[in-house]
Picture 1: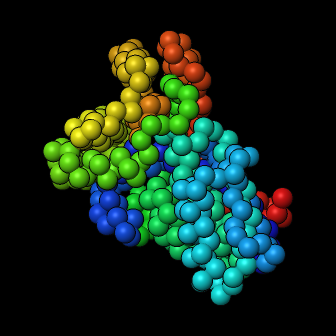
Picture 2: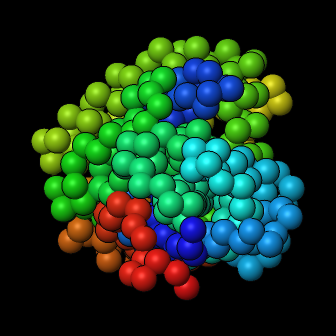
Length: 324
């Protein structure tokens, strides 16, 4: 056993995942397709220490809250059982972007933990095994094990790479529209939506059709063909949340303003398409050569706090030397 540091990138789903087929096993109800983003990175160090009586978890320099720590300890317990060891560990994780704000920090966080933790406990897991381990903690984390374009089929235990980072010359601009953490966590939101939204069954029935359109667009490198389906996937997902009781509304007024600016860009001839996860921030997929123009346009929207530009990102990796 040794300290290991791993880095994983968050991924943004273009064909959205929302809802669980089996809550206990954390399996997705619909297929999803994502792009791993280079600029949204989590760096996690796992240090096994036999002298510890319990795991010590810090996130972004603070002690993890009880709920956060339980999810981390749960994954470590799985790894310890598989490795046949009992040593507790120190876990230090930090995001290079806002945490718990709708930017997929749990995806990159649990992907980095799966890789660092498995190596720290002496396990040599395949990418598929790591994806399954990460997915069990956070469904989207299963996709962050891989770089570039990634799919996670409905009810699947692990994600699958679709195309490498360099397959398609695109970029993503993230417009940050509100400070702080989101009011309703994703898991809570999914359970509420599935339990009482009259639109949820329609979402589960029709989401696979959008997934296929987006997948075809990626493989054909056709942003104009897939872009409208990307926007529809996000809007259909949020419509199911709006109809929950009580409603789940992640949008802020600035969210709507950014969406309108994207439509204005498109009317002016710029290929740009928006998507939103379970949070207020807007992610805009565009051509690589348009990223500066899109970033400048979004930054000029009143209320936008900042913008993040990113190209496609790599698979999760262990830092050279492994330890900090």
